[in-house]
Each structure stands twice: as C-alpha cells, then as structure tokens.
Image 1 (cartoon, helix red, strand yellow):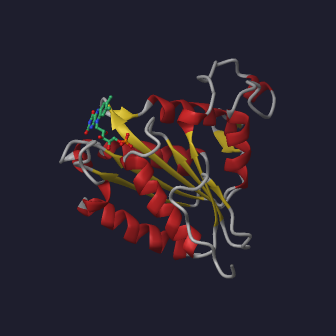
Image 2: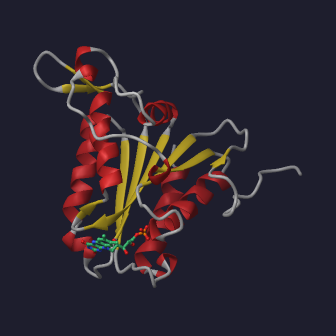
Image 3: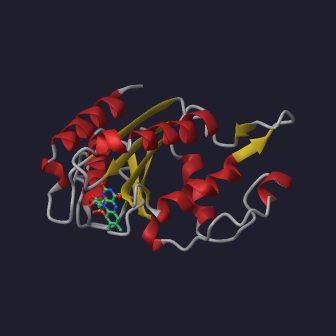
Length: 212
Ligand SMILES: Cc1cc2nc3c(=O)[nH]c(=O)nc-3n(C[C@H](O)[C@H](O)[C@H](O)COP(=O)(O)O)c2cc1C
C-alpha cells in the first residue's frame, strides 16, 4: 500500500507513518480505554495522523507508576529516581513536539491517573537559585488538553481546571502553545462525538496541528 496509512481504530495504540512531521504523544487519563475521552483523543489523533504526523496514544491505565514520593531525588540530581513506567513517559514527553492530554472529570477534578502523571512532571522542573523552576523539557512544545464531564454546564463549573493546566504546561513545563477544552454533558450513554463542544474541539485541533 502506498500513501499515508489510515488510522485504524481497532489497531495497536502505537502508530507511526514514517513521516518527518511532528511527533504527537496523546495520553488518555481515563480508566476506560474505549470511553468518551479515548474516543475524543482517537479523533484528535486521526487529525494529526492524516496530516502525516507521527502519533502515539498511550493509556495511563495500562502503565504502572507510583505517586511522586517527594524524595527530591529529581532536585538533588537531574531526573526522577523512581524506577517505574513514568521513565518511559518522561522520554516520550521529551521526544514529543505535541502533547495531547485527555481526562474525564471525576469528583470535580481530573482523574487520579491524570493527577499522578502531572505530579510526576515535577521531575521535569529544574530548580533555579531564586526558588523558581526552569523546564527540563525541550522548549517549543505544544500542548492540547481536553476534559470530558457529565455536567451539562461543565465548561463553566470546571473552567478553573483549564487555568491550572495552562499553569502546568505553559508556566511550568514551558510549552509555547496551549489549548484546553471541556466537553460537557458526556456520560456512559452519550456518544461524545455528538456533543457540540466535541465538534469545536476537533475543529480547533485541526487548526492547532495545522499551525506551525
Ligand atoms: C467516579 C466518577 C466521578 C465523576 N465525577 C464527575 C463530576 O464530578 N462532574 C462531572 O461533570 N462528571 C463526573 N463524572 C462523569 C464523567 O466525567 C464523564 O462521564 C466522562 O465523560 C467519562 O469519561 P470516560 O468515558 O473517558 O471515562 C464522573 C464519572 C465517574 C465514573
């Protein structure tokens, strides 16, 4: 077969098309590998894939990683000293040009899986003498974050989450471009792609990936 292979929904979650375009790392913070967040992330990945980007989608639920143990090993040295599956994620985050993160909202916040990931990114911060931090990630990355939630007015109620994630990805981790969205009114009985906000997310994702 020639040309750009099609994204295969049922295929493995690591797909590379050999192109020289951006590396996209998509991270699903839902425990459900076929839930609303995964569906939305899959569509976002398709957009990147179809324009020739290298795309990898990982499900945090498949990985084995602990909470941040507050050992400060990453501040005494230059990297996290906890040996678990986060080591692979750090490497993938470092290699990625674009990080796409999706999480459902559980009990008014991101899932525990997602929060653990974010806590562990503390190891990607290098301390400065004045008590602030510099990112250890290569500069110039882009981040695209999506939350799904059951409440119909979730975009208003959970707006603070998008602000927090701006702080994490831009202020702390040094991403140069950041977008975040909440797709409300999703439940196990709802097809997330039929939610109006999902259409907006996919339109914005097209623009986001298209932008240099
Ligand atoms: C344990 C649990 C807690 C939830 N808490 C909230 C909540 O606080 N606010 C909300 O709007 N939706 C809440 N929901 C609904 C989910 O956010 C929503 O159904 C989401 O789309 C599920 O995503 P998933 O299919 O990717 O797992 C909760 C769902 C579960 C299972």
